[in-house]
Image 1 (cartoon, rainbow, N blue to C red):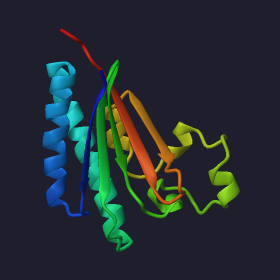
Image 2 (cartoon, rainbow, N blue to C red):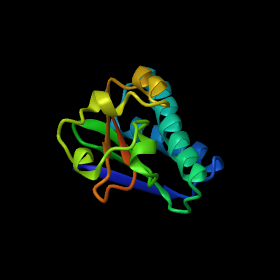
Image 3 (spheres, rainbow, N blue to C red):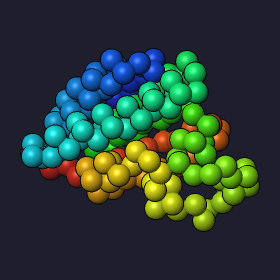
Image 4 (tube, rainbow, N blue to C red):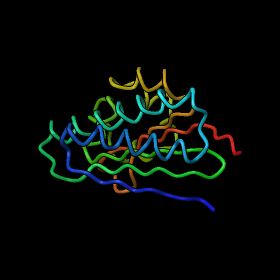
Length: 146
């Protein structure tokens, strides 16, 4: 059975540590290899720090959301609500191009702030959230069931 942990917090840097601690605890329970937990901690911290910084930059009081789930892998989603073109580091794009399937994960992860994440996560995806306001940073790690 897949378990999901959802954490929402106000965009304050002090809450990033909590998200990292919860993320590592869920990863450990999910079966992520012990030698990978530091990468998980650092990646969650980077993604949450990025989201908090964007919210603060644009004066957004919306909560940052982190969802952690386990099934065949450990998946973490960090969701911000910043203006899309700014949050992914691309120049302003018309709405029809934002919905275009030609926006690949590689194009979306070229923005500032993703270089470290790419080093911590082999399976990294960044995509617009459904309402077009913000991004979802999705990170996946393998699990090893005992």
